[in-house]
Image 1: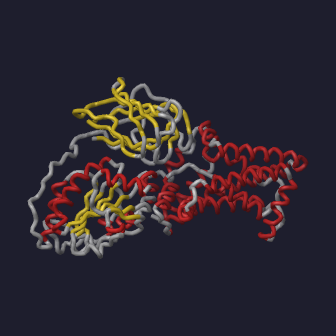
Image 2: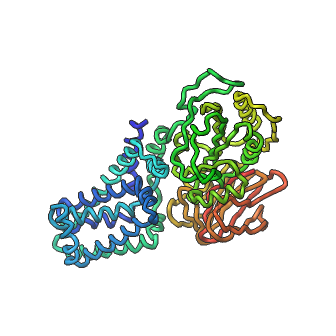
Image 3: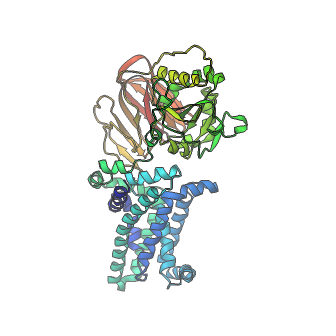
Length: 551
């Protein structure tokens, strides 16, 4: 699908660069060519494109390696914008700064040296709206997947956006040439504009400015990168059960053979192993291995834990091993200490691999939490189960593969399956990446904005009220932040981070107050039976919410 993904990424860059989310940087780009040579706009956009490309692909990785804060480059860039504003207000200062830079580039002053540096500053604060193409790049970068497709999509997107920015910069230069007689006044005006823009970036005013304009590019995105072909082209790896050829040989009780399993790769830390040493599938040859992809705030994963722990207790002495691959869904789950605490709290005794960079997740082409891959004594994948339920079937498969080892097995557990088999409200994410069944006022992504609650919402719908900052994975509460949910379930859980309180009202009556102290899953409602309910939550400003799950 590369032939589709690259052109769509280029078009997505063009569309993004005319959307309201880039308005805060447009005055800087427009005024950046004032007083420079004809080459200056090209140098500025070259710097912007280079540093934007680096920022979306490699900046997070490099900062992690160096142990530096994630916002360092943005803060440095804002400082540079203040510096360039000063050069416009005080021309002599500009000459002093750009003279050594022009020597490096072997070009006249006010050309490639200072222009490229200004463009770099813009590149690290340029924050376009994230559609499927940019989301593909950033998620791949988070997983350290810097393959040809990722780089190609990032490059095409950057070129598309940069062409529009180049047009703006050339327009600004042409304007300054027409008003050459008033060049001194223009420099002062654009110097003030750049300084004001930099102050706005410091206080995140740029996020509020974007809310003043309707998002008129949605329809264009729906016809390009967000179309069916676009979404398909930005899918990541195939699952191991699709990549490997299925063999009908050496099957037991109908179990298929999907070939040799990928080894554990890119693991940041190991828990519950001697000395924290890593494991490999080669070391585990001769054993039956269940590879369980999970994350500690996922209620579906937590509901599988009693079965996993029981199987481990029962069959470990017969050559059965579970390796829990903890691949984080949310940012706070990347903290190894949080994973260690959760592993201890939930009584997980089997080895846990901390897969922060999605190395093993990608090797399996996994897409689900929870997901179980059952490996035989030869290290071949023989069964794959996604989601909850069918525990007796999984136990039977474990026993079948252990029988291949001539193990004398204890009596089967046949634990009761409490997975709901009727229509509960489905898992509901709150960030824009997977927001569904939303019934409120239009979303203004990536900035604090006011939302209005509808009078009524239908079954399984939700809506925001008051001030929220709606981001890709989470929503962060501002003033008078309220959330409504119409659900059908016995239990309602919500993943929360921060410190503060959530006041829970059920069917118009106060229920209780939840004290949020650490990033984890909190139970908001726990009823005697499944019921239809209308939940209204009021949040302390600063709290972040990620996803509802139900039981």
